[in-house]
Length: 320
Ligand SMILES: C[S@@+](CC[C@H](N)C(=O)[O-])C[C@H]1O[C@@H](n2cnc3c(N)ncnc32)[C@H](O)[C@@H]1O
Image 1 (cartoon, rainbow, N blue to C red):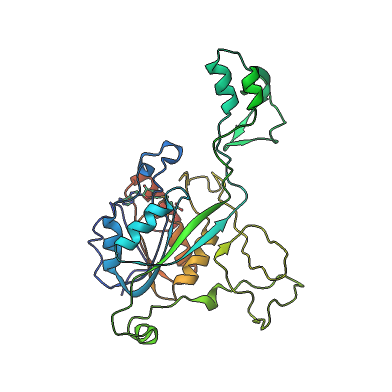
Image 2 (tube, rainbow, N blue to C red; image 1 turned 180 degrees about the vertical axis):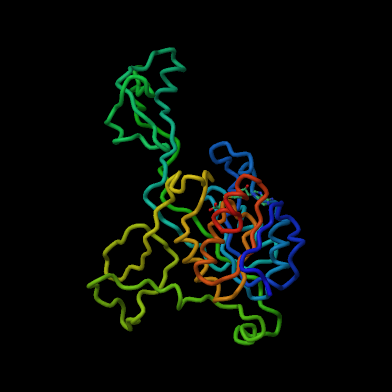
């Protein structure tokens, strides 16, 4: 019998431990190829080979969800399609606590013109956020806050290079069903080929009226927009999941950990109880945690020993 959690501390390329057509679905958050916080493992998108390997081990008709950056989603989608997957949808995980990453171009203009920008205060960075808001400045030992002083700098005050991020795309793909089989025949033969929409329903809030023309007693249907805040438009479907704050768990310093609650919603969508989920880029093991909570079996790979140890601890496969 397969162990509920099977994890490998090694590169996922080849997935040589796994047999062809043996895995029910895949949920993964691979490197985005944007050098996030200068982490070397995020320098490039994964080689296309891993998607070919994943296609090999997944059962025909199996669904998969792959997280992506906004900037390189197009390349990743082409890699997935070229590897043989069908592109089915792009889900949006929307959140409001993303970090604004920009640059004060006007200060660079001052510098370029040899003009000293004006010091207007100080601020303290906490996890990339200006604590207390941009107008709350802290003691003088903290970072200096300046405003442009040159004429041209003043003209371009506030100019920046990027908009505050508030969503991440999740590419929904499927391994093609065997030629000649209908969806029903594939489900009978392999147990996969459809999405488990029933399990992803979002229960009504306390006191909330039923939504839609034929309201379902179990709640709203899940949409391809997974948000952190309701729109209160009566028909909207939502699911509240903010990004994980760094150091939410003292021992887990993985810089890009995903909320387990979000992974649970996706695990529910992709699979049924006792099925097996693969995450070739498991990091600190958030997919595995979601699987354990939902009675799914988990297979994960992580090449960095430090992150692997965190995953071991979170998944309860390492004694303290
Ligand atoms: C975006 S992170 C995943 C974070 C994870 N979702 C979590 O919640 O902790 C991607 C992970 O893939 C790992 N990785 C990169 N290339 C790999 C490879 N070839 N094989 C296995 N793991 C790899 C990185 O070390 C990193 O921890």
